[in-house]
Image 1: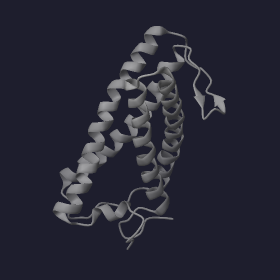
Image 2 (image 1 turned 180 degrees about the vertical axis):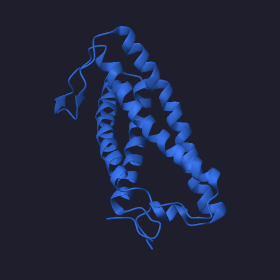
Image 3 (image 1 turned 45 degrees about the vertical axis):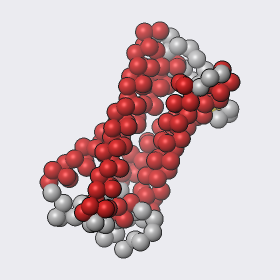
Length: 181
């Protein structure tokens, strides 16, 4: 379904909120993995973090292909140019960061030779060379990348809140299921 009258289509809205939900869950699992007391809890949270991260990777591939074939509706004409540029840059950086986090997470484990089991169903093939330095570098990038993600999400959510409650321009409705024009 194509967007109408400035709204995103239902598939785009669904993908957006699905990525938002699984991102929150994987962040929580990642934090539990790092800060948990006890090997069993750490293993369990890492298992879910890896599985959801792989899911995010697949969803992001689909989302990127969908976005290329279903462009976003233009922002309202009255939107200042600097806001249009900031919105476009933030969205591009969110996509890049989501891909970078999934790839560096995978590489950090695979280069160490660790099995990456997805939902207990299968292991991802280890297609990177065994290389401790590559693993350490990838894990560091993954760890720093989370802060980039947090900053971009704060900017994205902050802009949505600003538009909804300060400007009261209804921009948030473009990415919501109800109240579609």
